[in-house]
Image 1 (cartoon, rainbow, N blue to C red):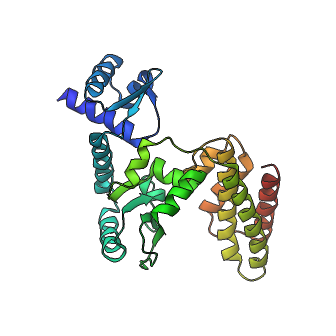
Image 2: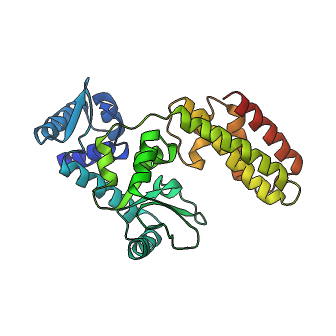
Image 3: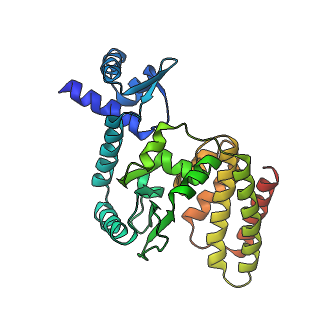
Length: 288
């Protein structure tokens, strides 16, 4: 029984960060299992060709069908234990019926286990059908296989985040095969596209301040998050959800982190405060 529990903890650790290679000490720390027992389990896993080993670090070998099944098992278990379970499954059934997808991936804050009761549920759907069903409090990002592969090659940060943090709901062996490949590096092209997007977004916020301050506040939060994502990409860090990014970026740009935290917590922000935030975001962008 102890061995079975330790095996489960170890496999779950690998599946939570499928692209990471772990040294034995970190596996022991994360699972609470002794190093000696970790070595024993790693030996058993290697005997079944479940592991890739490099310089005394280990990760699952997703070219092995069993490893792919282990990953989907833990993703299914995560969804089963989610407070949004019924909603996720109901929406997924609708997506399968209306979009005939190759893959459905849960992404965003719900996939990170940081859902809010009134928050949206976000899905990445790989499909040839671009007509997306309109479902309240649901965001569905649809793309074809070729679009996904192109974005993967470019090191698109959304694709990388989906691979690193997403939970597989449904898959015809398309999405999960990308775990056999290395996680792509963020490209300068991707970062420059984001910078140009932020510049346009900033102009839009100035226009909104003349007519809709509430919408301007929402867009300012979006701008600050995008600036923070660029900072993290420069550091080769995979951005998390909007609830994680402030903490992630704090060591690199404390003012950006403070702006994000305040805008997430505060629903009403004065025009003067928004202008101050815009000025700080512009300073941050100029340093990127």
